[in-house]
Image (cartoon, rainbow over all chains, first blue to last red; front, side, top):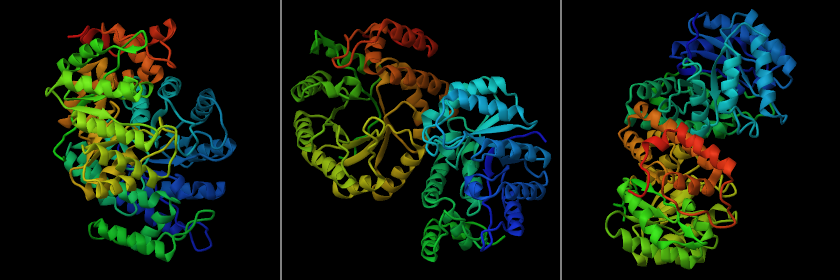
Length: 304
Length: 304
């Protein structure tokens, strides 16, 4: 299928059983829920899916379940980043074999290295597969390691399959520097905000966002994107303020509180795996109060 | 006090001759900004080398500007200082001299806790008896950020607390501040302290404090008008030109502004020590960026 990255794309969490092993049956339900409630694409496992806490075999098996459940209704990309790059290349090959529509990868973890190393790595990764590649920029989580406009332009010129970027700096300058370097070279290049900061990014030329809160409030996500796309800015502000308040609740120890919120919405997805904490009953109560005061409990679907 | 609307405010440079403030030259600078569409003037900001001026020089500069500008546009005084008492005395002077509002950054050099930031701004606001705009610029100020909670504290305790000028470019921060501040005081004003106006206006900023207006006032007026009319797509070419200039002048600082002013036919002398004038090589790079941004051909030359 032609890969169009636009609107609010969902990156599901990973449902876990009480022993922290993957809950495949609930994962199918969750992926299906996202597709039915307006996701324009699926991408898994982002960090909110506890990617680092899953073994490589678990990641492969869950990727297969996700791809099969989506069943070509929308595009699905597989996040292949791992601490060791050997694992990343392995996950990328697996994603292609499993019939994913794209892969997504962040700059390598932990180490400090110059921009040229990011370039070399993405060239190696992008040429190792025959799939579209989405780059992932997250300077605040990776201590300043980041894509610049120049680096992105060089990679676009080198890689015909570099189709977009998940950009999670939430910074006007950084986002726009990359966008204005990329679009003249590849007009279809999709600049995707890291979570649903759609108002400041779509107004600036962004294509959409990955989602933090889609498992809680898919209606809100979809309406915010539609409001931005149709220039209904007053309504968009109202919705963006609301979604941003939710993000502030979920951001700390992500995705612990998000998974706590899923319980309230009647879509329990189990605990969060250590070293991340699982939301305590008190925390879940707090989240419920917040969701109630934001009107989420009335405006969003309950259960699967 | 709450009826003061920030609008499009220019931040003029300060001309020096033989290391002394050139008041005759300053008259030309002020007249230029008024002819070029400033709805207000803020002085002396960092672009006006505030940090390199003595308290006496700052007060003389403000008094001169107030007398010269008269009632043509509001003049906003910068009361930023390291010590709270000195900042408050600057604010008190501004109030008595007839300024329309005051601006204050977090203190220079120190990294006080949030409750001391609130005390600092309270003292300035009490002394000024004018609308107070606090200026958030963590990258310039040892990463000290004005927490959204502190903004709310100020709104609750200081009747003349009017708004926040943001230079962080951070979507998470801007939306958090505007959400909690407007809940406390609906007339709270968010002002963009950089020319990344699209995203700021989209999330609710109504004012712009622009140093680049010294160089490219037509571009900045156009960008501001399109953004306040919420014509974000139409504003993108102007935003792109502003981004080129923003980056060029961020890299070259005050020395760049002085070189740029000379290039535009408005020589204001070199910067004051410890800042040095640009080298010939750096000047060439900067002037090439002015060509790329279209500034040399499309903007007014000379004093108007």
